[in-house]
Image 1: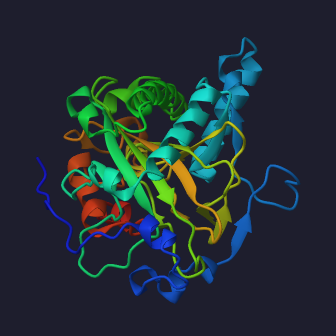
Image 2: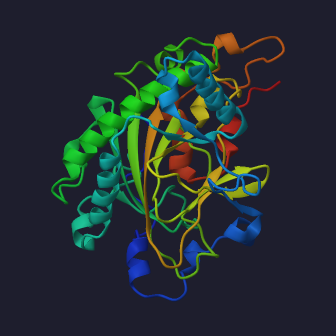
Length: 367
């Protein structure tokens, strides 16, 4: 069991309460250094139209993967492979998850965050497991904070699933979490096979490296980004790569906020209707020996609208050693990373908060 702190280093302030108090200037604790503010680097807005003048993360139709036409299937595999190598991010449509379920998941969590503060406080979290209602990542005293609240819960493995810690209000919430968890975890299992095939490892390799479908970790973090009176001074989530295997994100369809770092530019992702956004995490980067790379991303906030997004993190069994796949280690491309368990690995972000790609880079083996 990893060592963990049972309490936050300072009293927790709910960002939503700050936002709703009518303040015109954000507290100093949320003001980023000049170099980290949203306008500090070039920002490019993505769109699904006019591709000749706009950048876009790839959009992939998963239906083609199950086509009887082998050419369509091969093309879809190639598109996923290219997206993993060149972007580390892509959107998927026709993925098999009900659009109604996606819509109701977003709406139910909006209802939770609209509840009176005292009801939400019953689910307040600690930095030991992060489960529950929270407002910060990392336990460093005096750290500059992000403009967001969240709810974090474990879905897999079953031994960590504790429905008592899930919101009992609104009344449909626990049932919705279970249904949404089932469907998204199934989708993640299918995506693991695709990634594994594309790496030339055989379709079950990555899943087995994660401990098998019964032992994988799946956690849901529901992000709430309240409107902000000074969005140019802060971030909803600081730049980071995701520490786990990969992430399946259900974005807010009305308000864009996710930005991906591409060629030193921050690209604002424009979600496609009824799509999930997939991004490679650090554990897949390690297992693939950096053929696939996790990518820095961040979240900007909005002056007039709140945002809600649901991030399902698909992770290895926490006590398994993760290291580059033997088949992907050659004389010309030796193993780039030292073995480490996910338990050890995620302790970094839970202690220090989001810090770009500093953690995965620190794992590199001496050459």
